Image (cartoon, rainbow, N blue to C red; front, side, top):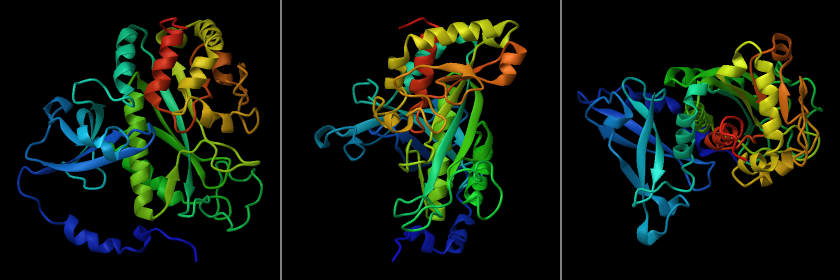
Length: 366
């Protein structure tokens, strides 16, 4: 018998009896959200506030048991949550909020997976260059048995071809989950700018940006939280695994679009070409930074097939989806704009990606 999520068997209508209850005046629920010790999974917990915060500085610093999140030992387990960005809560609505947090040890030093801190510091150093980022987040829906949602049990769907941006019940799986996520992101204040079905069936993509500096990391992490939380309601799994299915199937990336004030100005194509030269000389460092496991996940994806470059080779080109760095055709024609780094894995930490790119192209750190 096929394993099902217990969530899919719950009567969701019962919950409405309680979500319609009026709360005491001034009470709001704040959901604190953070990255755990894996560097790719998200945790959350709730607390009641008796005021509506105007900024993250108004919110209390909180803590949690780091020994249960791969971040501390039991004899010294407290990890501290420092609020950094506030979003509207699309689940509870009203004045309720979601709070993205940085994590710190008891002595005030950042946790190993708190890459936001150093990313923010680098972004501050180069803010005069006005770096903009957009990230294309690919992901895959799974059944509880770990197989892609809607795939034949014990078999495979028809080969890739009809699924990308597809329409129709035989081509598209779980569009209702995608639409729910899209609207929840817009409601929350995430700068989501689009979505589409991807090349492998049950695989999708959403795009965040353009955002200035560290904000793209904030919005992407919150969009990921919303995706996992909404999939939970539907009783399915959303995975960011860069290669969820072996064989002749596309993997999943987080293609990162990058521009600066100079690349967007007249003659910016020459600045883009200079940036690509810098990236080519620093390929190995970027591969190490572009997935949470130092390139090991990307080894499964960056094979030189399925719209990827080889992990061991740096290539760039105009409109070339098999390159490490792609210059869009329109950018080449106009002579200014942005470039796309196609190497980051779907489970990357966007803060690390942003920091590594800025250190290379703006600070000339190799």
